[in-house]
Image 1 (spheres, helix red, strand yellow):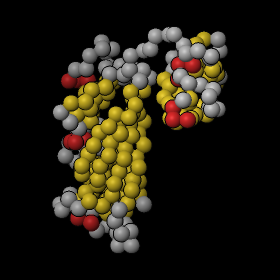
Image 2: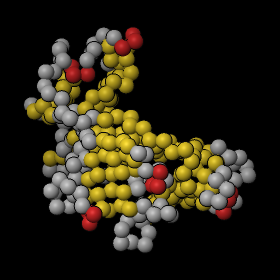
Image 3: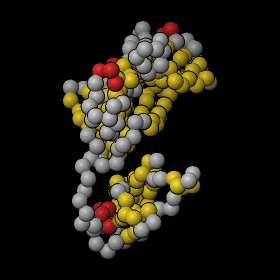
Length: 239
């Protein structure tokens, strides 16, 4: 299972991320290292993000150790996950799955494929997400513009991280009323895709910009278009 953690480091201790090696017992394992914060304007690393794939043995979590070496590792760097961005579309391929984002998805993936036969290709009959007009991220208001507000305003896609084990896509935008396009909430969604995995991790930051004395939220939902079903809504929060 993918693990994301961080290492706090003393000033001057580590200058290169490749000085850190992760071991599972005596076996060195692949890891992705990202400098989060530095000492003295980049002279050494203060906080290092660390990602790796963990395993369970007979249902028990394994122990992993991060070792600091005096010199950077000479091992070859693995290629980052395939990430493409063109014509307003972003695609991330993890191996067994491919995910695509466009404005049509209203913050969520508008299309996804699962390599069911394991041939390394993604055919039309392997598509598991196909967005429609009612799909995407939304919230329900008590009075604003008929109630439903979709994440459609000024959508911006940013690749925040791209490495051999994971890629992170940030989606920024505004929730707008369906009829009058009245903007009422800002949102930031982060999707993390992992090498060799067919799922996404999502974080959703929801910033209310309307007067909460005049308006209330009845519900928040995420709806995905799943071919062959009438609705693909998998989450709804009342409140």
